[in-house]
Amino acid sequence: MRVFAIWGIVFIVIIGSFAGILGWRAYNESLIIDTSPNINTHEYLPFDENSKIATLEKEASLKFQISDDLPVLDGAAAVFPVYSAFINAVYPDTVKLYDDVFDYNNTVTGYKRLAEKSTDIFFGAQPSKEQVDYAAKNGTEFVYTLIGSDAFVFFVHKNNPIDNLTTEQIKKIYSGEITNWKELGGKDELIAAFQRNEGSGSQSMLIRFMDGTPIMEPPTEQRNDLMSGIIEDVARYKSKSGSIGFSFRYYVEGIIKNPDIKLLSIDGIAPTIENIKSKAYPITAPLYAVTYKDNHNKNVARLLEWVLSDEGQELIEKTGYVSVK
Image (tube, rainbow, N blue to C red; front, side, top):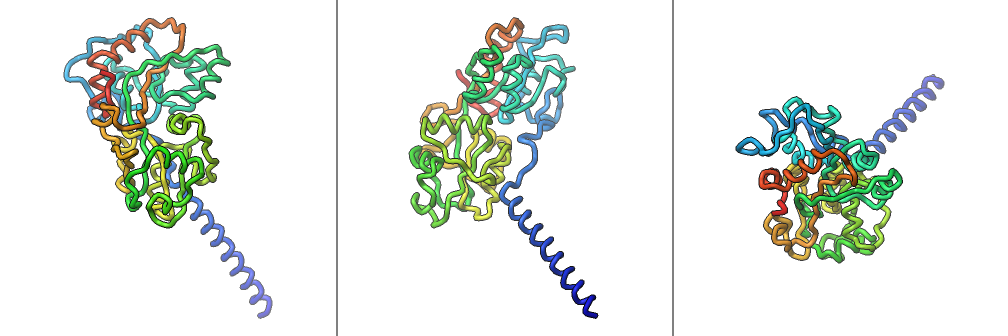
């Protein structure tokens, strides 16, 4: 009987330890929720009658043929619906995603491939210094064509009473100078300031926004490799109202549409289309078509000229960005 009792105690200890490990894992997994892709590409494919992409009311003035030297397109998650719409309008309908003409590798891999001249045009935010340096090491010089704009936004959980922050307050949050929401007129709770991975479009934009102010090193659980993930982190962080994150307005409002977060006004100005157009909103995010110098494919210039035409800019506007015209 004593032997059975001892083994019973051992069994209980093992089960308890296992449950503790599972609980610890569950807690940590609750800090980084989302593991889905940045965008469900199948919802924004060209030549699909059920696609969500913007379309023109008439045939585009530029039409590539399958025999043409088709420019290879790639881009960031937030811009996938835009360049997919360009494919739909201009390219032959035999083009498919991941067919060596129409790619989606997101910002980090996308800029790497452009630097290695594996693609012709990357659509997205401006690259990081490291990405420009990597291009130089490969003998590549990036060329930037402004095709639209958006707002760089900060967001919190909908239960957070804060609706507006100044640019200086945000810089102090992300430098680690302000650590509690009560310093900003909010609740007495620590601020969980989420960040993205290095080289992502939004993290590079944060660095430019900080304008030389050092950014604090976040805890591992407060850095997310997915743009969709940072939104989920803020929406479902353990204290709900304690978190803050950043992204691009169209991606948050046009693609993810998470009802549990709210965009903050910055310096008293909301990130609306009207305020982006008028440049009243203080943090504009330029949208670029990035190519490389000395690309001998003449269709690259033809496509860029069309993107800047009324037709291309119509697709920019219909998608949800602000055109350059």
